[in-house]
Image 1 (tube, rainbow, N blue to C red):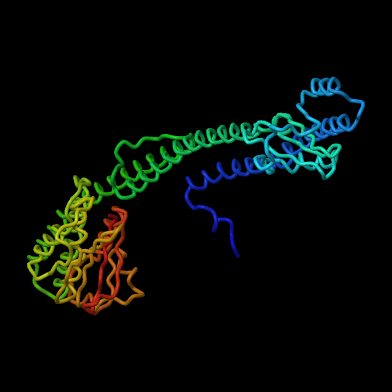
Image 2 (cartoon, rainbow, N blue to C red):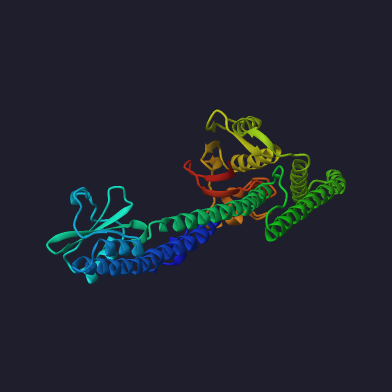
Length: 431
């Protein structure tokens, strides 16, 4: 079933413009139709009736043998109409008279009612006079009247002014609409920039009161989220740092104790705790002082691959500049590559440049993860299939922190089946 929104524009500007233009065009169309089909036609009909009465009076005078030149002159003076009871030798030839002109059918109909069908009406070549000819005593009589006496000839001036002022009003409305929509578009750009972890230069609340209120609310939300993230990062760094001291004492105490199976298990637990704290601190250090800037993501991928000391090929363009936080993205991509190398013998990085997105794809040839457990892999501290976690150290925070970083940039991380047979991790970032 067709709905109104399926045939109307989707954008706010287009919809607002439609709301302005549709009523104006409808009113203009109805006004033009009524003005020309009813009002102007009725005025021309009344004028035609007056001309018909005068023409009937003149023809009666021409048929009356008692009327002489003096009477004809008096009728011409009273009616202000030039007429002759016989066609003058120098009269305009009928071939030069225009039989069809605007509203000629209305005037012709009124004259036929008064003079009968044996009359002819035509417009002079200069479009200023109307010639009405009729039979009188086997002669051709002629009445010449000003066209403006018989027809409304300047009605289009009214419509020209109406259209002019309508267009002026539409132009003013479009200018006002541009100002309001520009504020909304600017607000949308600012919200998108805030969602990607960066500020929009020169942004300040503008436009209508409601738009200003929305802009202030977004700025306030951004400030609160920034403060929350900074507080979280500071707390995480502080707690991680404070825990390292007692953890070191525990490791030293266990090192002095006799070696047993329980002691080995305790040492492994302490090693896992130390690794978690290291990841926490790395995350906190990456958040602090990492400003948004333009950098080459391909060079960063090569740098990450070289840091693992193993053959990790990088496939993609020679260079690709994006805007983001390089340290945070370096840590996120490193986590993805590290996860791949923990569970597989080989991995590769592919950088894809799309029209709106940049994708960093990490493939491995390991055992992979079942598709129904892909989302579960992003949970903190999650340890999934035994085949993938067997004899592999880790805190279970790598994917979580990678997705957190990607979403901070307005992107995301998702998992899929790799063509190499293992797991594919796709980090998508806005271009």
